[in-house]
Structure formats: structure tokens, C-alpha cells
Amino acid sequence: MWWIYALLAALFAALTAIFAKVGIKGVDTDLATAIRTVVILVIAWAIALVRGGASTIHLLTKQNILFLCLSGVATGLSWIFYFKALQLGKVSQVAPVDKMSVAIAIVLSAIFLGEALDAKTIIGALLIIIGTLVLIF
Image 1 (cartoon, rainbow, N blue to C red):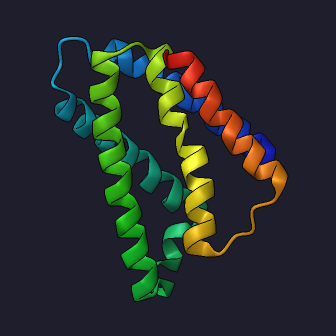
Image 2: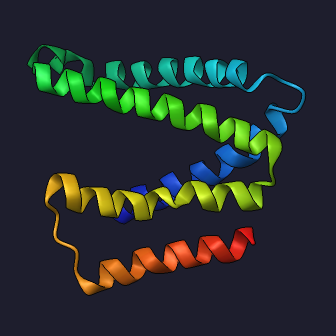
């Protein structure tokens, strides 16, 4: 079942790039990111409230809060740079470079989370990097 959600995430990430490229035309990218963030904030809280997730907020630990906030900072910075890159470049070049985050996440998961890297994972990460380089050059 996880792969269905992953495919949906990929689909909506692709749509994000297309919609953003059109939406940021002639617009300050920081403003565009702020507008996008407000929309996401409303949707995320609506889902959390409707599905009951918000009722478990009291179970959050200081570590949960710290790392969720750090994740939010990283996400915000990613969006700011992504929108600026989209404004300056082609979606067909910016999106693949952005997806190099997959290869970077694999390396970081081994370093910081101790996740084992097998040959298949290493080869897959290298192919992502090589494919990205082919698309941008």
C-alpha cells in the first residue's frame, strides 16, 4: 500500500512543479512560497482535525517537536530555493535536480540514522545522480 501513496506523492510533486512554474510568472518567489505555505497549512490542519490526528497533540515529546520544527525549516528553505530555481530555469531541468534529494536522503539516512545500504540501493542512488546529470547537461 505504501507504493500507492508514494506514486500519488510523485504525481502531486510533478503537478506542483507545473502549477508553480505558471503561478510564479512575474511574482516574487518568496511571496509565492508564503501563499503556497498558507494553503498547505489550511489543508494540513483540516485533514488533521477531520481525521482525528490533532487530538493526539498532547502526546508530542520535546524531541518530536524539535525535529518536526527542523523538518519544517528544511521544507521551507527547500520551497524557497525550488521556486527561485523554477523561476530562473526550466521545469525539465529543475525538477530532476530537486529529485536528487532522493539520493542525498539515502546517503544521509546511512550517516545519521544508521540505515544499511545494500548494493541495490547504492546503484539506484548512483543512477538517480547520473540521470539527473544527463537531464541537466
